[in-house]
Image 1 (cartoon, rainbow, N blue to C red):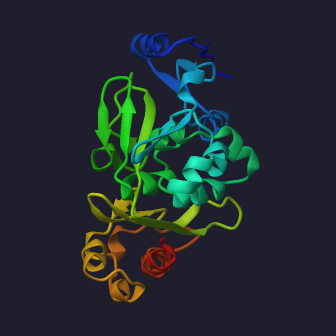
Image 2 (cartoon, rainbow, N blue to C red; image 1 turned 90 degrees about the horizontal axis):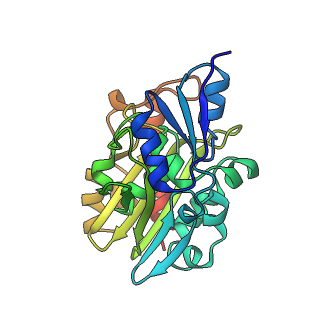
Length: 265
């Protein structure tokens, strides 16, 4: 068994200093990915920085035309929050469909985004809704945050503090879940935002979450499932595994996108 040092900082400043000064530190939020990874010896950090004591990172606020969600807010809280259900019902539905009750009560929105698992649900919402990711150092636009499978724009000592979601005119998220894990084999989030129409896909791409610009352009002219029925994503960019090959996933993207458009309110 390898050794690591465990830290439970009492402030964001202390947490940032620990990340800056430790050789290979890892942040522990909900631990839904990190703990299994540690058990399988797929990660060997020098230090674990547990953010569990930082209650200021767990909140949901409605201000103006936006919803602000703290990075340490559990999925279960997002799913049942009255403001989210009123202004962003698509996000509430997404949150209530993540994993099982244990995952939803421990996993956090910030942890999901920082991990950027290619099958995670939240990246599709952030990208489609053109959300803003606030960190201890800066504000990052959704289009600039996701850099590839398990890769983000976050620096080694940078911590997500808050995500701001603007109210969309209409939006919906539909996924084809793995029957065991409920991870998205293909998930599509469509939204008409103040800045235009956006379509984001998770669970299917080799580089993680991505936008489908051709669908966005078609929906801008005609918001209907028929408008995108003939649009196909490139097979060569799709994931292929025991749950579904690349051609199957490419087909599912169009099918699920059509369902999302039809469901958008």
